[in-house]
Image (cartoon, rainbow, N blue to C red; front, side):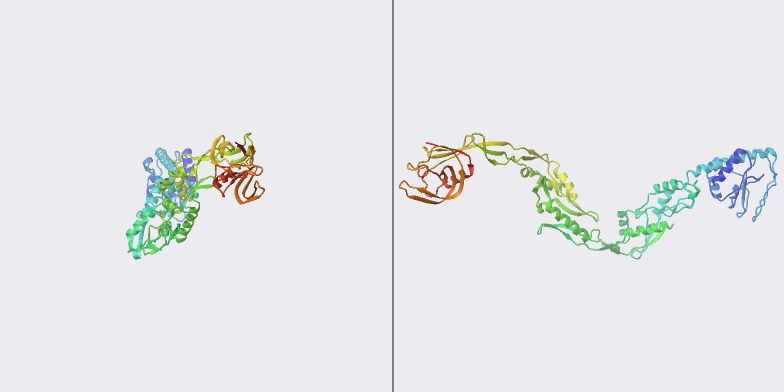
Length: 554
């Protein structure tokens, strides 16, 4: 067809005769009233293209003269030349057809005006044909079975949308032959995009795209609208299935499942496929059974079992963490007030109560914050370390918790129960503890000092006059949890005292120890040791490390 347009245009520019000989008939109004000659004849099998374009552009061009002709005859369109260079009666025979009668030649001045007139008309036709070829879709093009050839993209989009909306579906059987349309069911197709695609890939000017393969397209039904329309049409066919569920069981403190139950209905997906098939075959009506078909629950028992297992795993880890430490675990019963498993249109999801989480968050500072534990080292008067009394431990404090409940809720919706708390570290301090014990024989007391502050003071029983406790500066050198003791009396006899508890030696065989055989503290009673109540002796035993200074004076 492009060749035809080119030949016509070239004939107009060179003022030479050009004739289009076509093997399908032109409409009678486009047959010439006369012919003058023929040159450079070419075949065209797309006369409909030319005729339709001429019709589209009649308003901008002068109509060609018309003459009657048989529908079976070949049509010959002759362009009148500016200079007659062929005899008026030179008409070639048309094999197999009734030959056309040539009209008598006109005077030269009429031929010149006729040539100009016809040349201008054909030029307009050619311009119109070229313009139209740039805005129309190729003939034979279908989108989802809907013809859109010879249409602009806008007209094609409207045709596609109308075709789908007007498609009729007759529900048979239980449906009582109720008729619904695609519009009733919310049938949709991206008509504009498909029309634009058809024009972009198959414009009219591209002959290779004429009568091409159909363009596929997705047709969908609006699930809610289709379900509503079908329920209104055949209510007896619907018995909704029951989805499986997941609930918290307080007795077992776990999440358990509730079983599903099948129902009946009309399969919207299968109905959609039937509509697609009908439209693809060029149809606009179909029959579909409205009888009840089994409808499976959207949430199966297997779905619910998997969700319950996931929830129970979450119960084992849920809590507020500081580093790897689950500082604040959350009890299952509390979790059950936070989380519920909901059926959201056939899909199980976790619904979180943020207000319930906030109640726990409000109590976090008391459970998470801690003061630092200072490092304590026992030293002597020279600063020599005798014992590390306490290891230092940093403290911690929660930062702002105003967003914790919302952030944790988001995590829990995704199945993550491990919430990392943000804390600031409070460093510990190191302190030295200078400890010593002072025994006052005059007042019969023992006083414990730490950094020269009195820790405690008790009455004691030191050595009797015959077996006095030595005075001087000493250091603790040994500890015995319990010991059998022997003492030599002034007369040389030996006194045995079994199971003497909490012995702290500081001077040879002299030391502090518990006493169970008398309660006469405040008076000298011993053979040189410092007798104390048993609980006091134990305190001294644990408080005074090896090397602690002991000062005994009168």
